[in-house]
Image (cartoon, rainbow over all chains, first blue to last red; front, side, top):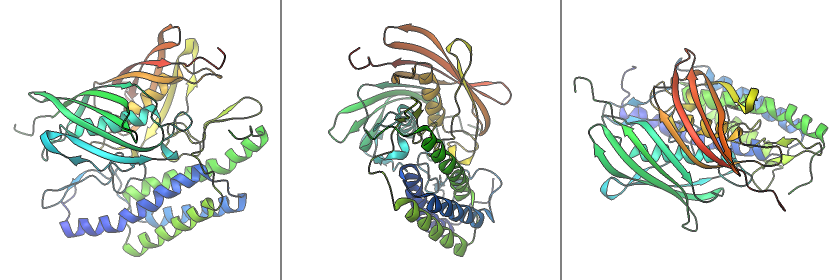
Length: 204
Length: 204
């Protein structure tokens, strides 16, 4: 565990790497959809290699983990679902509403495709795993998935979507959560139930 | 639906965009782990923007879908799990072994992280959804997920993993598949069962 970063340092890092990662998300998208000529593709690859060399000149040896700032905030920059610095992450912006309910609005493009024009079923599962799990997270105790069941009730087209989750019940360290994905018309396309485990804290 | 590409054109496109996307995967990884100074990060962003402009000079208006070549091969370049041109995809390389069994070996780094040092539970679900579904795919009839149940039986550390799946039974258009993820020690970390639907072909 490295030292907890100063909150101001953390904010500066976010202001620096947030826009970088947004640009990178656009690059991931156009790499899939591009019809550019060979010289442009070859040149684009050189630029990508050059960017990777600059960023790779100083790297953390390990995957960049969740870190906690000195004011106690968790930094989940690398997380594949919500990570500010992870171009794979849409990223999900999880909002907590009343009664432990959580919700996120997102727009998924070409990079999340499975069947033609549709979100990959596994991406729906990833989103639901994360958002159902978020109902069980506590500031000092992240929750791990025990079991996840996902039912695909209608096709999920690429585009604007909402995911929501809520707690059905809690039993000791187990949270029983449920949730769903709805499309822009309000049609439920995927439903999920999951059991999430919050390991006891050290000494707890 | 655009015209089916010539197999030679398809191969040239793969030879051009495959290495580009591999470079992009490395860039996604170092963007998460970088500790570079501000001027290097700012310059890297400029290079990324420049690459996106080159590739974006000619793009398909729609998400780049599965296409079929004139020799009947499917091109799943954009697929989020297996897409040659999708930097989000590890990409999975699905091998078919005996009796409809499928398997894939993969190495997951920082970009697939959830809990510190571990693969995000939703990424495990994505991989299992794809590989279980692959048991039900037929050249002329892709399968869609009906239901997927995932049990997390041990932590999945980032690193080398194997995913495998097999058909339990088939009933009409439904394939009942099962599968699992094992780590480098051979420990099963995640198990899954799924029902996949193969829609009847046109006129079928």
